Length: 402
Image (cartoon, rainbow, N blue to C red):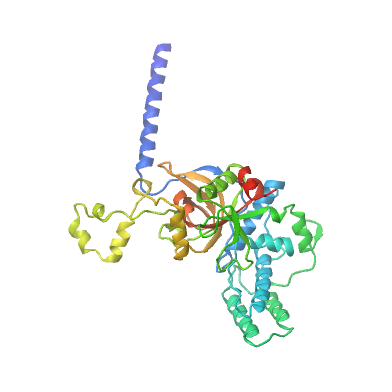
């Protein structure tokens, strides 16, 4: 009896093992991408910027919410539109000083949220939603056109009056709502400044980085993108160090505020991933279908050259600093979108990805998240920001970050 049970048990184990191998094999062979999370850092909820060019505020706000959560365990919902409002006002002031040559558009950069919270404060979402124009979701098309027209009128003359700022504030009040001098939240009365102070974050501890060769490594420089209207200095590091900083942050429980180009054909967020496929050799594509290949249009050939069905037949670009720089100089990498990196994952072939929280609602495949391959991250990262405690000690020392 015991011998039979042992034999039966061994057979059962063997069958179970074979079944698992078959399942694993099927998983590997299947088309498409299957992601398994490796690191997932607790993060606040996915938001929806809807029809507003304010991804930078959603990303920066979510990043700071995560920093507060790590520090105090509080899960916050901070107002993105309070920051947006203050940036409109600040950008307009600079536009006047620059005689109409400033940037008063909807865009912004990674540093803007911390800048506003440090200088103007912060507010909870429920106190300041920024929805004062009869819409349930954000839509800044009309607001942006009104501000553009107004600031064009203000800066077009030979001199400005003392009335223009009050006029702009009136526009912002009408569309986003007036900012209360004080408000009560969870039974405590605050001003925007005292509420920001209550978060417990030193906004100077949020450090921006980039990696380009047209400035010396290990020195800061004002990143030359239009949305860096503050002319903020970004610490310039070698490509490998850029990756090491982000990996170190995630390994130590810190999320990463991430700005990247999202115009690539491999950026398929609605399918849940972003990859950087290498163009296949035309001879490989012809094979036994030479006549078919000859008949394809140039557009079809271009599509065929990048065709892949999943990680099994995907070959990605090997990214170099020189390649990054060329993409930047040719405007193939532009400052498109702000997001938050919240972890890492692998696909069924074992390739590494970064797990990213987006601000385009939750009505797609991973409920507001998607996965970015390491080559895509290396090539298409414009800049990123981390808490100083997330930076490796040797990097902090090089930049004298205390």
